[in-house]
Length: 286
Ligand code: GUN
Image (tube, rainbow, N blue to C red; front, side):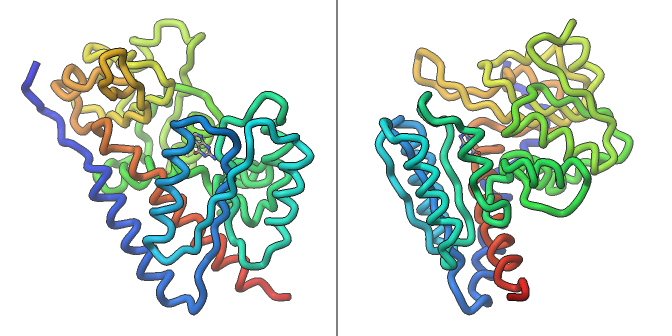
């Protein structure tokens, strides 16, 4: 299938605009916001993500540094690193790349991060604020999806939205943001009965399950907006999303490509969160 009815939502272009805005605002601050990225172990994918975050941050005037720790690190040692970063006035944002090795409880680490420096928005205080509709640091990938929907001119008020996936990193915060934007939100997952039928009802579909090309063209309503958060590598080396792109593009009204859709937005939003954390922390009295 080669016909493409859908408008392509260009994540690279929207991300470039966000980065340019962050760079411009950072240049007016009079200081460089600091970002500390903690990388545990030597998972190649995590190493690439972290290198990209570090580079993108430095390119917009954020002083980013990566703190590499061995895969064998003890939880107490990692918690001591976090405590040091919490106390370091030059550090505005702290990000611990996930996943963590089994001897370290990710939850304990996330809860040890100062919520004011939690640029991933994973701390329960920030999660709670998001669900209460209070302004806070919001997880980068769902925040990026909201910016893509805005850039594409998608109206969310009263719209039927389906979030496919219920992870803490994407699905749950995504549902909260769409709800706050007045969409009528359904969260579907691996135990959902008749997933294709649920998807077909959606005017806005956000797929974030990490299963290559799970969502087929005939699961998608005519003219729906399809946001594909998945990045899956096939045995032949190709990168594909959670949506069968060519099939979906023939029916959808608008769709994000993989790569070049949501991916670039995650890092751009991390930079924006770091700027936001810096501005909020450094304007606080005392
Ligand atoms: N691993 C996969 N996605 C993410 C993310 O958004 N933040 C962090 N810290 N780790 C991740």
